[in-house]
Length: 360
Figure 1 (tube, rainbow, N blue to C red):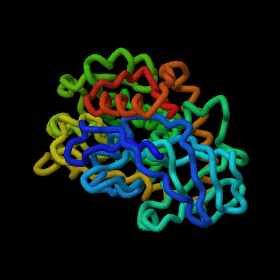
Figure 2 (figure 1 turned 180 degrees about the vertical axis):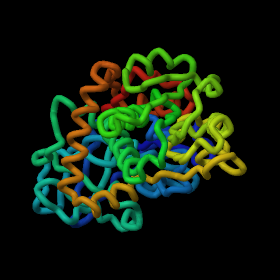
Figure 3 (figure 1 turned 135 degrees about the vertical axis):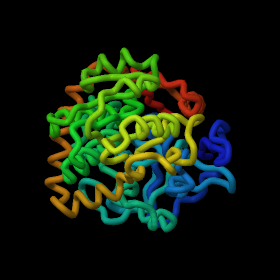
């Protein structure tokens, strides 16, 4: 049997453990046993915009339910593909579940792509799996950090690259909501490295101000209620929270001084107005959704996969040096722990000083 966590699509606060028959492995397929994955605000965004962006389509569930995607590690426990052996480990996009069947294609020493039919229309970056035996990014001592920060850091890297390509829209500062989130920390770190002339301003809940200041990633930190205290000047905003009221307060405060409004994630579930925050009728620029997979494809086309990988690797090492001991990795066992952690995060109960790793 395979154990899965099913989330009600019309009620993200409802999640249950379900056992389904594993079935016989198809010819040419590989069965993965999920070893570990992280649960972060990124996964909450996958759930919130699952309908609009298609995240529910990666791992099918019964009508009305969905399986939230995770980033993590898995081990091959059965293989009907000659070049992939039982016992091999991989890193990639996994379900909140105990097992996953994949159909390897474009196989190389470094990885493969899942060619399962229902995944083909979906963004290809999510269908790639790294084979850890020959993965240059793999560090056995940093598996926890890679799961927790890796995908979020890359989103931050791509935002900085996009902003630099547009000369930061002639702004001299970037306003980041949900500044305690790992994606915001990723952007702050990369901007600190690659765009040192851009002032980094973090917005966060009152209870997280001390933590955000302690990271050393931001030039200034404000609580959400203090938006009106921020000095005016040409700015871009990057909204990781999806809180319609906060987004409106930024637009109203900066007005024409706001040069670009970027929508990335949704961490404030109960406060959102629509899937990415209310954006109609706001002063200043129209908020624009940033879809990281599209920007990753554009980067690879522009500089090539090898150069893109080198650029990310350099920034990644800088990020690890920046975050240091600001986040403690906490390991929990079992899918029930994953279910509980997911529900706590949906409910807004997130300790930014912790990174949760689940070992099913």
